[in-house]
Length: 124
Image (cartoon, rainbow, N blue to C red; front, side, top):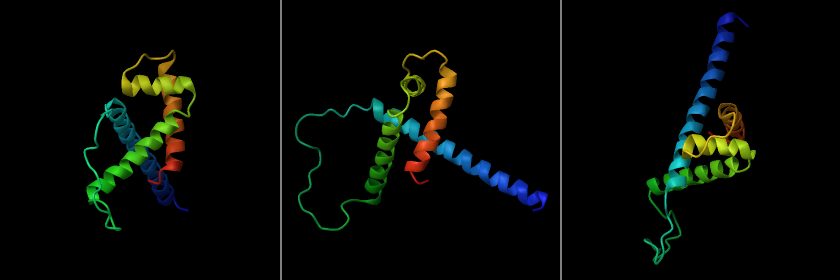
């Protein structure tokens, strides 16, 4: 291989990593918004299905929101599978809770673990 090919391969791999990190950051921001959302409503549901057509049950936007919600739930489950100190660091960064000792180091490890595990579970 010549030098230009090697540089191009390195650029592509770095670009892919950056895109995954950016997407993980987006998912973590959405996770934080989801965690802050109060959806403990009592009473009748706002929507009810009166008739089933047997086909697609919603618009494209609803399907997209459902897929994003599933990804956010996946991120939530992965966060709660991490070491408790890493979970505290994620909570401190995204939910403004108390920072654990050696916060930056624990957050770095947590982000690395999230990037690896979420990257496997969510096909980006």
